[in-house]
Image (cartoon, rainbow, N blue to C red; front, side):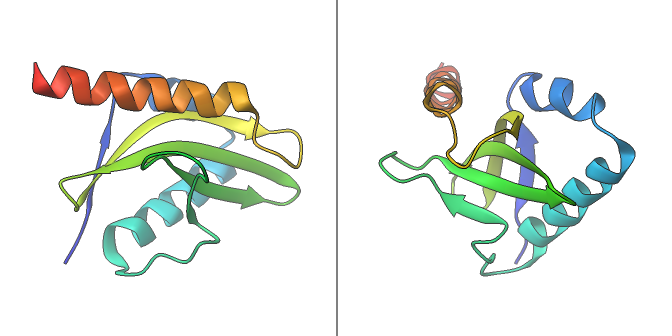
Length: 112
């Protein structure tokens, strides 16, 4: 029982290619968990409170923290949106709003 990871537009890819290779490796590790582990620990994937189905993939390397917003589509497909480096304790509202906007855009495009 595996999940598929898909990118919505180029937001994630643009973020990813600018990262250090050690951060990219950690992201690949977490993606492997998301693809293969039935119950993903909250340490790696967490629902954003107060949103309708927006999740954050959580990456930590050393003292650096990264987030990638995503949602589930048809249960087994994970759609990736924007990624960013987290600079403070709380995820910024601006980033959450961007993730929600991209999620809405994705489902609007899908409906055609």
